[in-house]
Image (cartoon, rainbow, N blue to C red):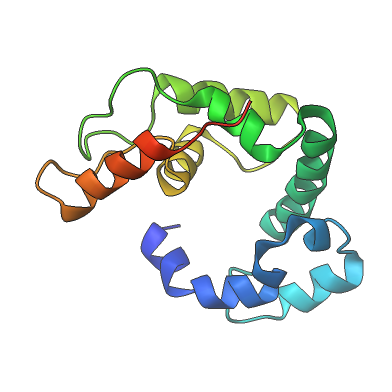
Length: 147
């Protein structure tokens, strides 16, 4: 499945999964799975839909254990700068995916973990000439990492 497909359907995913409110998604049941399997605006794969619900439940557990999702995920901040747009995984994304799987998360591999790390600002791999690179670095310098 391509990221382009996912990005083209992102508004449908947002609506179907209550704007990714994991507290809400964690309460989904079989009726919700059936509704989502009929939603042509998203990827209708039972295993992936059930994995989203499972992962939302695991996220609730993580908040209870770690204090917040941010406190957990920021432990995987790379110590070295990412080379601009040169990789799809990293030692940190491999470790993160492994830990998430150990905690019962599903459909989360190193490439997905790497993309998540990019999206949340854990790493900045914008090209050196990209206008966003400097903006992201400035934001990262001002950001207070959770403990």
